Amino acid sequence: MKIMKVDHYEEMSQEAAKLVKEKIKANPKATLGLATGGTPVGMYEQLIKEYKEGSLSFRHVKTINLDEYVGLTAGDENSYRAYMNNLFFKHIDIPNESTFLPNGDADDLQKECEYYEETIKSIGGVDLQILGIGGNGHIAFNEPGTPFTSRTHVVKLASATREANARYFDDEEDVPEYAVTMGIETILESKEIVLLASGENKAEALRELVEGEKDEANPSTALQGHPNLTIIADRQACKKLG
Ligand code: F6R
Image: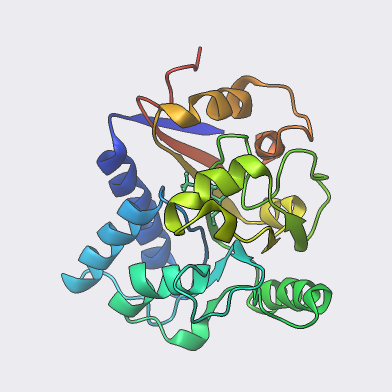
């Protein structure tokens, strides 16, 4: 594991965007695994800037997201599909049909999970996966206790996660209780992983990931065994690292 310590959120975002850009330059048909939440917003802004300046094209790139809430339609402003469209896709030249998220509104969610696994395979797997980390150590929506052998599945969100994400909804009650998420084993199959962490509220989770025991009680520790993992974290998030 490689740890890149940076000063602040902006620098984290720029370094992350640089790695994404290098990946696309090396392979214009790369498949990017993408995350939502607050952490990667600055990275998306930086990538949009690069696109607008003409130094980067996403025309042949494919993207596959980690997760989606259950019960929200793609048109719902709080769905992760809407997040990705509004904060990234509509500002760049990626064709809509090259962007994949689970359908959290599918009638048969089990089938949807299987279909998502097949989709990942059919586009050749993930070349570069961007991850955030939950304050409780979750990666994607794999909450504490999720088996490291998990594949894409439906998960009941931890109350800490619903609380943390309530900032996007009118009311905490409105945060969906369930989500579809790539599994831990699915994520570990990514050829390269870049995990981003910013802020003091991620310091304990980051310490566990870097220095803790590998344990299913802390999903992020599964990443310890990944052969190509880079962590980009700002000073606040690194506060508890020895
Ligand atoms: C988002 C995701 C989550 C977030 C995590 C951190 O697609 O999979 O694991 O990365 O909850 O969220 P933020 O960045 O909002 O602190």
